[in-house]
Image (tube, rainbow, N blue to C red; front, side, top):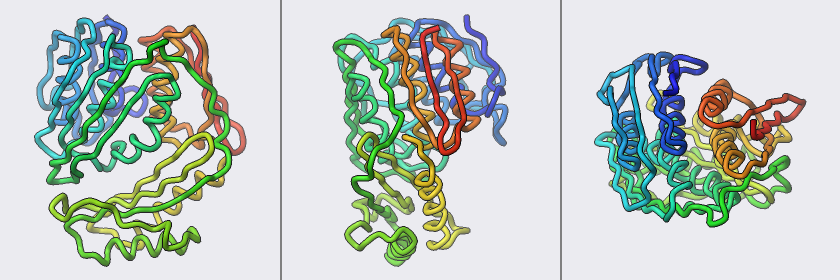
Length: 345
């Protein structure tokens, strides 16, 4: 039984999700105390409970403590089972975090899986659909597996109601790590605004402000395809496609922020990344650390990537991964980029 302190490091839900994913992937039981102790509302919220239930379902796990508000969990998995699954969050909680939980073990299953996910698709503090589709999924394919994502309906806070379909195909020859030291030349960049249920001028102002700051032309500024009845909601996205990797950055509208403030916040994030020499940004680094760890474990070979910032979130994630897998992470900081190396222990 692996015992974890949920208050370690950044003390958030990523500790829970990574632990569940790797417990199922490795077959090792896990007990977690002080779940989300670093948050204003500690314990399991609806979206975290949905992650627990989804992990249990794909593995036939025995679970204790799977209740709203619980700060303790005992999870004993069975073998991972590929199949067709429906996972729903009866709120605007992020269903993309549920995908993040079940994807790693399903990548190691003996057959493809198809998932129907419902809940929030574009949530603050969670990877939005377009980030996973454009930035994350190509890296899964680079490991030798496949992840195909289809957005059926957007879901924003507080209404939720989004729908996503995911097809997960394990690697026929096993996961293989890779090196991603540079992002290469910029091939294209564009911004799009999702603002269903809001006045049209919101999207126009956000896109015009971002376009002016970035020097982007009208054809690079797009209004998203979200239908009016999928709101109200507001997400401003910028996609940068490079030779080696694609990055997606998102800013979410709030009642306390003007359209111009939302755009300027995203511009700041874009410029920080562009001014670095790294292959990926801080959020993609978080996701890539787990993928590379799995591949290093399964293949017996190491992998490397560079990122613009190593957050406490990423450091905590690496520490949790090391508790489950016989791998070790080495992080070195240099001007312009940090290098993250993972190798078999």
